[in-house]
Image 1: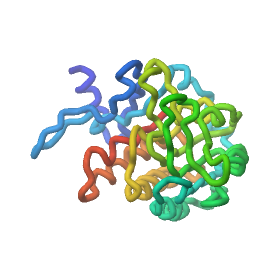
Image 2: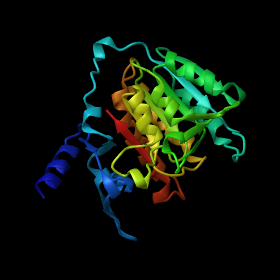
Image 3: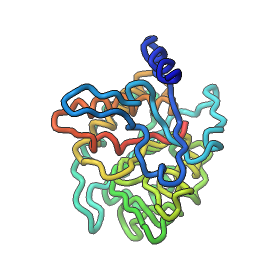
Image 4: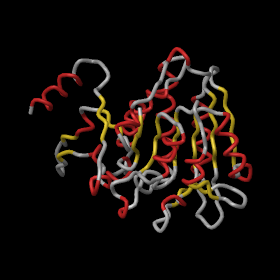
Length: 275
């Protein structure tokens, strides 16, 4: 009760809501803890998201990041868009997603894009070494037999940017990654004590924060989430701060909740991991 009352006090002060980091293990790793609450049909609900902004972390040590705002490099963002991966259904919403992102970019941001056939594993691997922010709008697949082969589906052959390849990249200047693809933060039930998924691999490669998904997302929702998230981040300062991503995602999710016809399953998949 004490914590509950404290959170209400903080949330009603007009300041940013407090943040909470979830570090679940075992079966809890597969639950959307950020969506916990008392849900009542035909009545108002009381949810943890009403009081705090949630993030996840695979380990406590992952939060011990040396992030000096006085030494931030200029924001260099790469958007990777693959609307038609081989053997997968088309994702026409990814083109709209790119359009919405470009609307949000301000003059302080260097912006590059790799779209369709140009979004090969080699070009993307080179591109994310040069950029410190990256946005993926594509299909994601999970390999249950070998989680390190879970991948983002790109162009060319090989077309899979696998977890093992991502982990092998050294990206000391990386800041924020948005994995706008299905199941990018879904682990393996046989390795429930370990964070073996694409988002955790991106953190391990050097990114300070990651926006990812627990399960499938709707193609029509992704552009709205991307636009709301980046609009919030770039409106805060002329120098974008990746630590605003958790708050920005909270704003985006609220807008998603307000869309007619959207249900619990529309907004719950989106999570933030890291600082």
